[in-house]
Length: 204
Image (cartoon, rainbow, N blue to C red; front, top):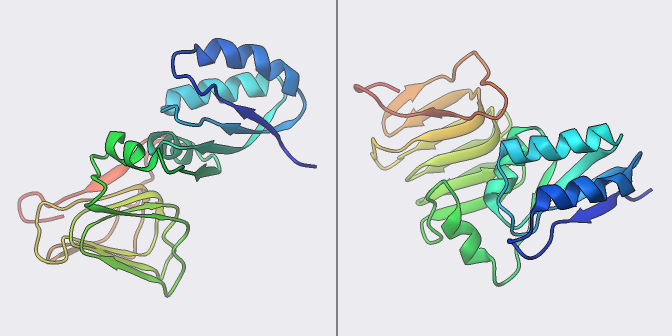
């Protein structure tokens, strides 16, 4: 059986909380995909959606959006998510995101990097998905993984000491920033928070 779909209003001036609280009653006992369209939702917003769904015995199976902020929030909370873009939203989506990733300076990749796969770019790298053990990322700038970083990541590969590596779960086999090498932390971050490493006083 296909999931039911709830789509956010196209107008950003509508009170979506009030609308969703009324509409969710029609989906009671079903599974649902939520299409957030161009709405930028944070973790608190998505928790609110999920709480209303749970009260109505409705399960969220997928969160779709045209804004990367919403997808990052969904990934941070463990929801299956999908970023889609139309021709008019590509530049707006990248320009407005909180990662300050300019469209000409950041390479975006959606999906899982598996063992043996290598992703190497001169610009910043933003991955929406996991990096499995045995996979490698190498960037001339920052590395941002909105998922689990379990493989090897090298930021600032050309000697940029100000580069950073960010992930929702930072447990790589090896971290490198410029010519510095380290391992990831043993502890996992709190739900909804990311981890970032940088060079401080000559060490990662």
